[in-house]
Length: 125
Image (cartoon, rainbow, N blue to C red; front, side, top):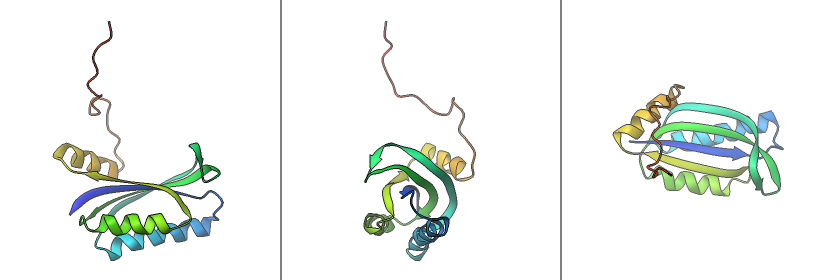
């Protein structure tokens, strides 16, 4: 079982009932294909960085889960054909450091600035 995170954005025009139905649909796809859902984080409706399919806002959700790698192809397929989902991103956590970060994130613990390493950039003089 690998550690994953899926972020998806729903159309802002959906009612609360429709949003909950789509969230349950995504959770059902995960569990039917052998995933163990750790946490679901509803992030609310937010302004998008740029327009996507004429929408300026979207309803965000993040799901942290453990699953066999074969699930990801099926999840991508389902998310692509679901019209109410305007964008999605699947992140895989592989090494020990990433898995430790996944554990903290999935339990709602924020990382300290010391734990987040900046990219190696040369100093400007």
